[in-house]
Image (cartoon, rainbow, N blue to C red; front, side, top):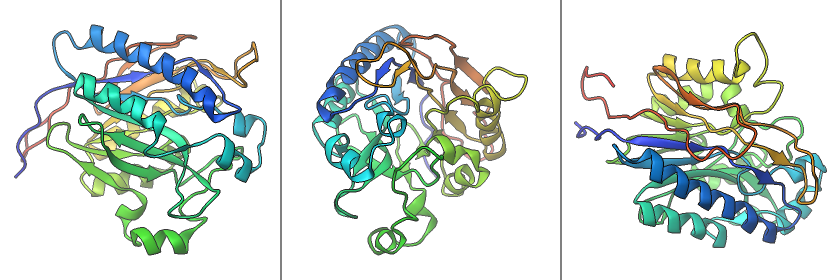
Length: 297
């Protein structure tokens, strides 16, 4: 039986993003992320260690490829990252500095699968600064041009197999529990989180969703928040769900396209959130510990 995980805090960051039209522009968004991480950990980590920092979808690149309907190959070559790469190394330096895991999303090339293609990729950086988890978004919405594992199914199965873990991998750790990752539209389907739960996931990262989903229905947070609470409740796990802050459609534009809603929910309900239109440096999640036998969280 696994040893219990000591209580810890998670931080979900809703940062202001300028959507990129060249890869070099990611550096500006990373500057904002770095400032937010420093501010958040210094405040949140006073009484309990911050062991997991979660970034919103689009925190590095924004969504110009979707907004401007860029050709897929152009976006793959000119906009998006490699994992590992210089962008993930900046995050790795933060992970090492604060002895924490960082979970993030970025559209990224996977040349070992196919050249000139990008996937909406979820990845985890360990406290040692190493990439210890990668997964691809399986369900994309109508404006998104990302490849999915099902678009290249034969090649995906050749490399990763055809089991559930090939499409919904879970990172197993001794210090933060078992972490699974999905993204945005993946969470519209209950089977996505159930697939992770069946493999032992105790914490699930689901970054970002946009209007109208965050405003549908009578309650703040819309169906986005409803789904996150339901995932947590029916699967007995924690959801860590940072949403994007203000997103500028291009580096030069003066208007924004979306705003932050709720940032984190757990099996005990929504633990923190913000409607802030700007960068939200700290949104502390709930402490967590691994269940052993019948003990609760």
